[in-house]
Length: 230
Image 1 (cartoon, helix red, strand yellow):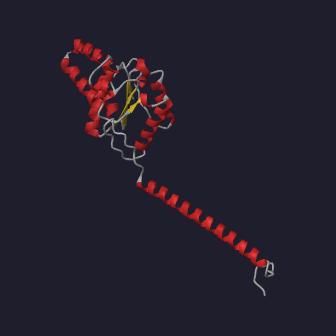
Image 2 (cartoon, rainbow, N blue to C red):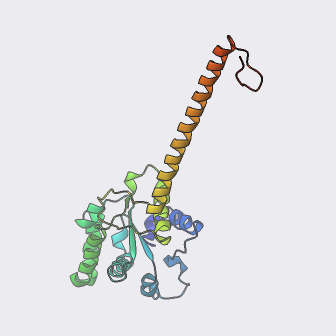
Image 3 (cartoon, rainbow, N blue to C red):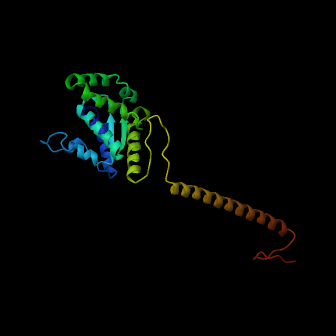
């Protein structure tokens, strides 16, 4: 998980982390680094071995040079290794990253004064590139729990081997189910429909036969077994 600690560590980020762990997913975040170790020492290798990278982009995300370095490496792994990247726009909009507005502009300008444009330009490109990846916008969910469930579900689908193409963030396509599961669902619906139809027909036939027997009983005496006698 790549996130800005001051924005989400004790709230949304922690809720998201524990939800994934409870679902049986091994999640790595920077808190797992031993005290006294150099920050970032193991991150390149950890990111390279990761199947899925979740990037929580919040309003102060760009103020952290470490978050931006992580993002650059994550996107490199996406291009070279096919790593699945799941961005979450937490109380920010993708256009703020793409056009560097608001706090993102101020953070980038501050980095340029300290590190120069050459290094920061890589970070700018990473911020713009991640907006082309389909993700989640917190403003579209009524409750954070709904957002977390949606992301956890996507992670579980990916880990279980279901293929899904992640496209533009404006792509609202619903992920398709496995063909076999879809066929099985249709088959069950069809079987249920046929069974209901047969039950209705049988009931109607029995009701009709009962009425017929009632009418005939006025003219003909019927034995207990229902056979006709003259």
